[in-house]
Image (tube, rainbow, N blue to C red):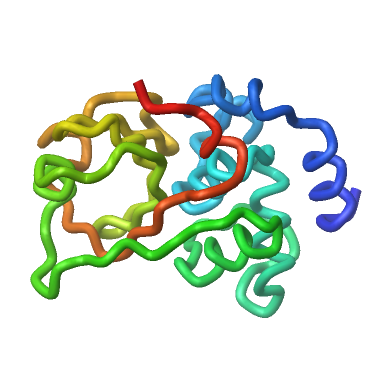
Amino acid sequence: MNPASALRHNQASLKPSAVALRGHLALAQENQGNSPWCGPAALALATGQSYAAACALLRAVAPSWYAPEGPIVTAYWRDLLGGLDRLGIAHVAVALPERRQTLLAMVRQGLPAGWYLLRVTDHFLLLRSHGFGRATLHDNRHTGVLVAGHTHGRRHVTHAIRLLGGPLAALQPA
């Protein structure tokens, strides 16, 4: 199956309710038991696509940057945003302070409740802010764990968007 048809197949077959339950173990299973890379994993979770479809989406957005086959080890922020745009998933940039802050500081300083796609020092992840200084993260190795110093909390936030659409935006943070 070529990347474009794999993308169309996965768009039609995944339901938002099923997407909300997926985590890093499901992504590993989709990647033939191998640990998935963070860029495609974050895009897969944010869009409701399978891991393979997220890789195909990145290849469709920037075909000259990604090999036609094999793992996508290094993804680019612009391409993750391009994937969201291609699927019509609304998002808005989050204003970040001039001096970079840690993920833990960002959460504790009153990040509004909602879903966020973030790039922290050398890593992509999804963040679900519950408000009141509490958030959980979802990435290629964690599913719904509290943000703490040992769960990427000490890494600096370099890029951030808030997801306004897509399968996760309909879920209300608890």
